[in-house]
Length: 104
Image 1 (cartoon, rainbow, N blue to C red):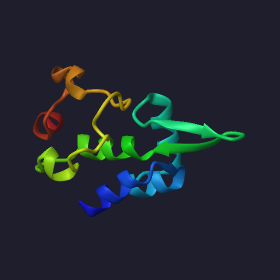
Image 2: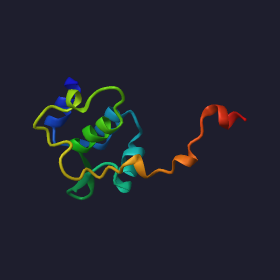
Image 3: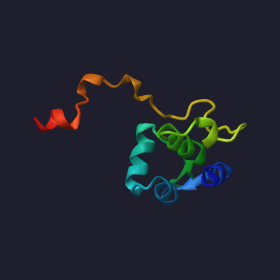
């Protein structure tokens, strides 16, 4: 949890930093920015920087078994406003099959 707090203190991350934190490739970070899952900005002649708040919000969005209050300190701006994350509630539950059903 200290890592999340430290992440929120740093405003902008390089693409490789965001990729390392999220345990994904740099290209996945670029795709997620294009898709709106992560927020970012271009600096100078095109160097992409990722907003650390959106990285923290993405981690929090996928956190399992831990209450939000335990992950994000009070007063944090990580969950305020639009983060570019999309809700998974719109997915069609009919498309999801269990492993047993898939094996049949």
